[in-house]
Image (cartoon, rainbow, N blue to C red; front, side, top):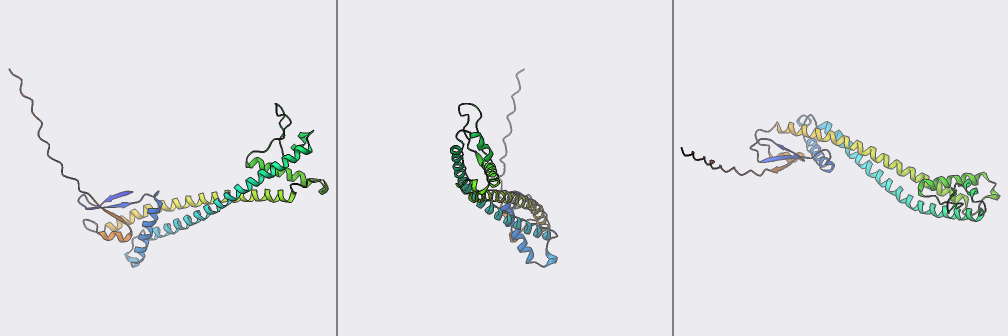
Length: 250
């Protein structure tokens, strides 16, 4: 909070929120605009229009950011369910590859799987790990199966179900990423508007204080400014004089 003291002898001080204190800043701006709109236009500060515009932008971008966050969370939850379904499908296809190509496992690479080339597990068909590897494997599996005659395609899992699963994964991943980027963009716009608000409210407060002589009155609270009573410091006690050293004997 920024503290403003009008005079050294003032019994109150005014507390202003920083631009990073968004909730407090927006609350103050709303109270300020409401009070200014209750006055005649000629009695308003020269900064009121700017504050009102920045407030509208901050509130709109804040609401848009919240909506995008809901969309992002929804897509993320759906992705968790689809990830589990994709792992099950990949495991089913891998088992199919192991049974079909027991003597020539390298053929499974045509359907998007990797085969260990050396070591104790040489010839094993590897299971894709992570969402990117799983989607890449599904893509290759679908491409290979679609290129084959319908009569030669694998029946389990059904190709149309694999395609639907891959499409859902892709769409929800795009939706989650899009919502995340939109939320970040709205947050940046809100932060910029809050910076304008913080500066405008400081200038408007200065303009209001110029209308008062001496100590500002508590009516400033009508504009939303928080006035706090100052605690007077106790007077310093007089320090006793330091003892003088005795003169040395002759």
